[in-house]
Image 1: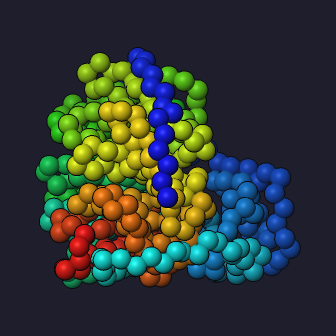
Image 2: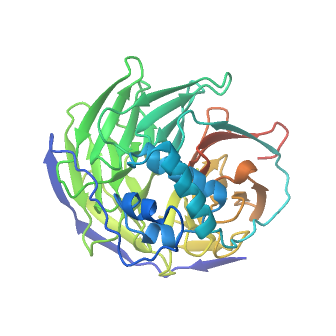
Length: 425
């Protein structure tokens, strides 16, 4: 079932820009316990004393995690620097598993179709890395951002060999992209910077944000001229970095704070960035020459977009995290079309990519996660349950062979979905 609408408002406005070469790296602000009550148990005090260093207890009390999720969550906290011993970590895991059991989630819808796939998965060498984004390289290697372990990693899928590159400053790497020379660039989500890894020397360069409010760079992407554009989610900026000079410009879209620029894509022109707001029901674009902003207000005010994809006809596709729908925006006409997702309104579409003009995405709130394929020509879905559960696939991208690379943050794994020969993709 799909719904079309033209209830779109477009606006144009100038953007405020700030440019600077360097500034201090911003560190995360410690949290406070808050007014959330933990049940009694042997490790209650350990949780109260140690799990509020970076966040309040709401993150725990309102969580919905399986035993495997809790195990990996504590590993992630330890990788991120939680001041506990391994023995204390095991006590905390047992307490959280017993005190906060998983609540029912939507079941993944099973829809058969013409395509056959094979899942390949690799466990990362450092426990609790929380791999956020994958990066499939032209040489066939698969990189990942080990956000909580503060490192980047490389996998050779043919041999299974892995190598990690610890970041020497606080970074919390989030999005990844490579330049034409094969170097890896990341968004330092915890460190207020953009980082570059020289893969030949293993050395890093850092480009701090010129405004301390731009504390959490999110998704980076190169335009066709080699300029690196990026979103800054909670800081509320869009930015661009010239690798030749190191200069950074930040653009603050007009309007209320809290819109949170998030997903980032280019159309076929390769120059003009398009991005979603996580904090509102909008998709926007910046004219790179005039520095003017144009916004498309999507019809459903509940709309929240995690990731986007673009097909060869320059249609923008998105997963509506708040409603479980798959959506399409025509940038030329403003027309929006949405389809009901296979697993319903609570399925929370997240990671997304486009291969041969077919839309692939993951329903992240089903247990296990559901891999979804949508054919725009036939308007038909096909689904697969992800082995080991998926653990929330936050981002995906095509490999050089036309397969799918993914990072599974809740499982501390990366994977490749092989689209088998003979499938009518």
